[in-house]
Length: 160
Image (cartoon, rainbow, N blue to C red; front, side, top):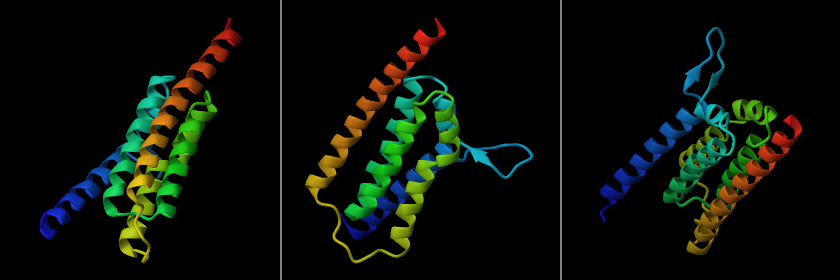
């Protein structure tokens, strides 16, 4: 692979990350305000499936960011944002408000862009760490599913 083709691949990845972060966190302007929301809080209105889909798309952003040779510290911050977003989003009503304000995908994009602007002379995460990240994403999706089922069941019992 030539340097030019690698650069084009990274530029394409950055464009995809920016697009997905914008769609999830800032796609829609709230009329009369400077505040924006994305489809992330809208997806979470569908208990379980919406949280799972939102988490999966957010995980895609983190995994796509691996192309840039990020150090472990930045990847851990990105995963922390993702975990907090996923966990907070499963709480009925309060989770929806949390999703509107937290904007984990935008935060992760800012971490990536800050690294690209001023890359620290750190060693990129190794293959084992990347595999661990993928396994953590799978565990996160499983946890989100189980938590959504648990909260949904509890909520249903309270309503009856």
